[in-house]
Image (cartoon, rainbow, N blue to C red):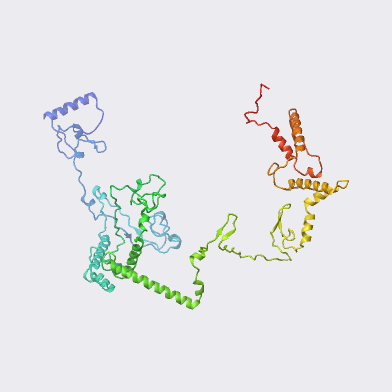
Length: 557
């Protein structure tokens, strides 16, 4: 069936269509004709003769199977946009609807390709640009997919000039002359011989480019092209252990797999001389590697200044020049130093002491005892501070800070026990006045004045000793039960009885232990509530919970 129309046929129409197709195949009925009047072979299968829905014309046809006729005018490479074409002269005034920036009617401000002006053409009416030519280029299938369609051949002139300059540079390298003027003349030889090519156009900067390449030309035997990078692979013997397998700790030295380099040592607890691999930095800065680097740097700098120095072609000459350069540098440095000293002076400040003396290292032998006394040799002199020492003012015979008052926790003078800084020294009278006005002496005088009858000298000394002990306990920082403790046997027995009574009362009233207070007098009321005997009685009678024999009872007794 050559018809491509798809519609639902009735049963009668479908039967007649079948009979017509059979008659055409048998040759009894004429064949169907397409749009151009050509007969359609009735033996063509339906899936070939039937056109798809997007090419269906409603009539029997095989045009969808034939190659479409293309217009040659659409596929030509010259049929492209005329870049930068302008439509006539520019307008004199700003037109409504034009670009606010340049004044052209063919685009808006957001699509303008010119530099944004501080004040656009809409407000200034100056420098209004002409309208662009809007072109409608009808391109076919091949023209749309042609990557070179619209290419300007004159743009290849830049590439051609670059490679021509490289060829001239190689020719300069092969010459044996080192004269810079000759190098420039050789770089300009192609200018007179070369004629302008109309296909590639002309360049006004040709002279400047040639001068640029001539200045960048290297010396004889020296080729340092910044665009060329020579990569030497850091290979190793296959039998050796790889760097990254020496230490498998991920926090160890970093290994760069791209350059196969490990700058730090993988094993930090091993000396670099004893390790299998101590890092690339160890080999890079050990031995004569540093000197070789300095020599190579000198060769590069000398070649950049126009000298014929190359370590690979003539290493001996390079090393001799480097040695001569260092000698001249030292001479110039010494001459500069001499001239500066002759002009400004100050040579006496340059004579520094030896390093051993500056660090205090001498060969004087000094032997000390366990107590710190010098047994053999001479003791090192003590370093003096920058502040004045042993300077006595205001009739003092000692410096400030030579005496410390324990009762008031203040510093003072040991000659007069004065705690006022920069005070006048009173001597022994000041010491007696300080002791008389101390809190310890005042408390002792109060307790002795409260007694009615005068006591004997022994009784007074004993009372004074007790008072001083209680005052020392009050003002000192020593805790109860610390240090050497002297216990009174009678007070201890009395404290044991009181502790047992207290524990009996504590079974009925737990608050009784907090209501016990001292009522002996003024001095004792200012001391600690717990005495040494009471603390010892508490320790002797308390029950140890962690004692395994605490609950032991002898049944035989």
